[in-house]
Length: 146
Image 1: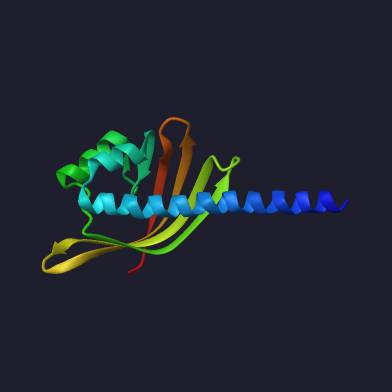
Image 2 (image 1 turned 180 degrees about the vertical axis):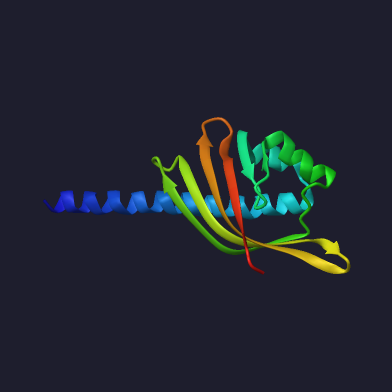
């Protein structure tokens, strides 16, 4: 009986730690992705974005992987700075899927001498691909008052 209890505790703790590893990994990926968007790092963005990416902007405009990465490179989507204010990661599907709820403050280049601020609440879905690793499949954002 004592061995069963020890085994049960071990399984519970190991399950918790696997979920924690996923959370830490996804939090790190989110920070790196935002940095890549600011730096216009198309190599990293093409690696992290899934081929079937659906990117819904706070304006309602929708992009796929190709059009979104192109918009970052050609200046259609410009990010001077991204400050993460909230970040919650939940793991599902035996740690093969992660859902992120977050809040960010995006600073864009000034217009008429004033920086443009986008305060967003967002939802992201990541899935783990056996060959490519974690892939961002979907982004959806809603604008908050500044």
